[in-house]
Amino acid sequence: MSPSQAVEDYLKAIFRLDSETGVVTATALASRMGVAGPSATGMLHRLQAAGLVVRAEDHSVVLTDSGRRTALRVVRRHRLIETFLSTVVGVPWHEVHDEAEVLEHALSDRLEARIDELLGYPTRDPHGDPIPPVDGHGHSEAWPNRLLDVPPGARLHVERVSDEDPAALVHLAELGLVPGAEVQVERLDPFDGPLWVEVDGQRHALGRPLARMVTGSVR
Image (cartoon, rainbow, N blue to C red; front, side):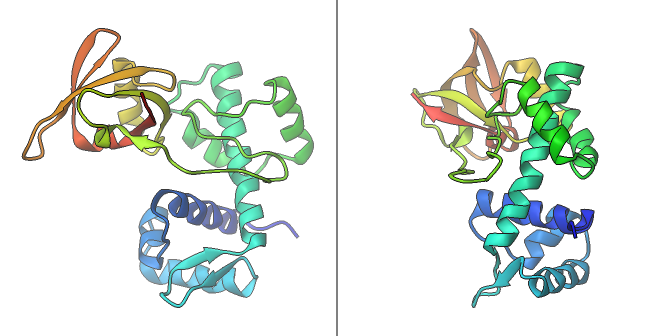
C-alpha cells in the first residue's frame, strides 16, 4: 500500500530538515509542518511503528533506509513537477512550490517518467535544488556556502535558492539573485546591518534573512 499524503509530507519534511540542519527534533518538525507538538509526536510514533524512522538516544529523528527511499521519491516528484511547471507551463518560480506540493502526491510512475524524458532528464529544479535519480542512489542534498557567510571581497556563484518564501523569491529574482548568477560580496555592516553585494553591475543591500536564502560556490 502506498503511504498516505500526510506520511509523505512528514518524511519529506524530515529529509529537508536533516539536510539543512543535520539534526531533526520533534519540535523543529512541528514548526516546519505548522502543527502543534503533540500532533508531530503522534505522527512520529506512526512513522516509527511503520519502520520509516527511528529515535536516536538524544531523541532526534532519523530516517530508516525505507523512510529515506520514500522521502526521496516524493522530493524527486516535487522537483520534477516544479521544473515542468516552470519550463513548459511558464509558472513563475515563486509559485511552482505550492503547486508541486499538491501535485506530487498524484503523479504516477509512468507520468513521472514521461515528464522526466520530456524535460531532457534535468538534474536541478528552478531553484537549483538537485533532483534525485529514480533509484535515489548517490543523491547528495548538502547545501553549499550561504551568501551571508561569504567573506568580503569574494565572489559567489549562485547554485541554490531556498523556496520557502514566495515573496522573497520575487524580490531575489528582481535583483538577479537566481541560480547561475555571479555575486560580488562587498561588506557586511555590523550590528545586524545589511550585506552589500553587486550583481550585474548593480549594488544591493540585502537583509540577513534574505542573504541566508542564497547559496553557492565561492570563487
